[in-house]
Amino acid sequence: MNETIRAAWVIGRRDFTAVVLSKAFLMFLLGPLFPLGAGILFGSLGESIADDIGGDVVGISIPAEEAQALIQTRTRLATVLGDRRYPELRQLQPDEGTPKQVLEAAKALDDGSKGKLAAVLSGSFDQPVLTATSAEAEDIGPELALLISQARSGTDRLQPIRLDPVDSSAGGEQRAQLLTGQAGQALLFLLVMLLAGMVLSNLVEEKSNKIIEILAAAVPIDSVFIGKLLAMLAMAIVGIMVWGAAGMAALQIWGPGLPNLPVPAVGWPLFMLLGVLYFAMAYLILGSLFLGIGAMASTVREVQTLSMPVTMLQMFVFGFAFYTVSKIGQPIEIVACIVPFTSPFAMLARAAQVPEIWPHFVALLGQGLFALLVVRISAMMFRRNVMKSGGSGGGLKALFGRRKTA
Image (cartoon, rainbow, N blue to C red; front, side, top):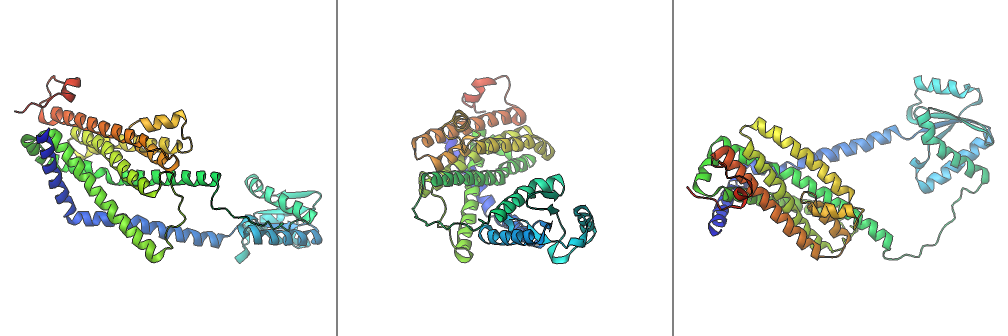
């Protein structure tokens, strides 16, 4: 055992130094800045386009007195609830034609800043008629009905309510902690998917150069796999530390900080520690699976073919864990906490909502043992497929048996 650990340490230190001190690692650290910048850019463009498009415009062809009352009601309510809450109203002239003719004309003519009509309201308050497509009627109809009701009753002014503030409420705190759990799951999934592929690419590169076979001839193959897995995990943690420090610095410079983030049930320090531990376990489990794929594959094409099902399966794993966030204590959530693939995500969400600590020790122990089991299976597959030393000694004996030295 000591020999295996010592050999794994040597392999891990070699891989970690080779990766972190390379120029490619610097580009790897800068990699997330490009999609982040693209997201900010396209988000700004989307907001600009939404402002240019504006909301729906409804032409109203009803008696002038009712039209003015409806427009005034809409203006007062929009002042309180927001301008985009209700469609814009444009009073039509009596000689503009029937509602259908107006809509037909709106297809060809653009009124510049006010845009084209989405629908026309005609008739009267007693018998309103909406000329629109089925989709537009379903979207705009209830809002217009509410405006007409408010305009007819004359009670569109909202009654002010005196506020008696409290620090928190049980319902609000529960919803906030649920959001914290969902955000933690999403961040954990993105980091694992972004970083776990490094294990596979490193193994395939060394297989193609025959380096992995030289290493396997010198030290136990289990040590090679464990060392590589831990080296890539350390590299991933270094990347996360750099990105986290850059993000905190950016918030201090350009942002107001994060004073109002929902506090998880276990508290922020322990939640962040559990986040790191669950990331490590999710990374080790997925990385060990990739090691098994690399052991079966001999070319890059085979790696891509074999890794695609694992990647897609990971999407379903995250979707299942994400579904159970709001079902704490129910059987489906307990299953998600037990299954090793979903356990890191489900347990992180549980940490945000349940203050109990002891389940996390059990979950981390189970996840670690499962990752070790998958590593042993991957090493056995590598011995059979590459080193040609598997023979007939498969099954549990080959899995847990002691490795015989040549």
